Length: 254
Image (cartoon, rainbow, N blue to C red):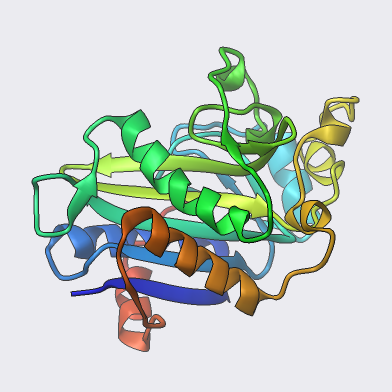
């Protein structure tokens, strides 16, 4: 059986997080092969790591600007989903099922999944490399102010921030890739000083590629990148109304 690719679509923040949760649970039940999904947020949103607390003033500021706020099932810090593309990947550990391909170690699985992203970026002549561990990461509110071994960077700037949830024998990893996101917007939403670091907090894919890339081209690059990294083939199958309805029962509170 081929793996499943879910093409780009936009949903509100709570629905997006619930869909990822639904895909993980359905995969764990043996009803779904490994799956790669691309999506966006409408309206734009800030997602928070599972155990992250947000300053009430920042929370109100984000809402006042017209952005939603939602909690992720994964860890990590706050991510702004605006002028970006988000991916999620669900798979199982080696030896646990016919689709078991991921290494049991957290870092090992991160490297495997990020290899799919690296192959995708390579199609735009970009050499994305894994980041390094930063001890100050837990003290930051903004995911893109630090680069960890779970993230990818180009020319020293973070291009893909990722977070992971491991549930029994399965793994959910999702992350954000800025396309043309203003450097100062997230610090403004969080009420943080716009420092020199904040003004160079992330890389933008369109800027690195030297052009605007269509979502159809992005879909093709991600699909091909993961197929190459895992030596598999994908069937492209969009979410249907039944799946969205089932996902709706899993929506998490903020």
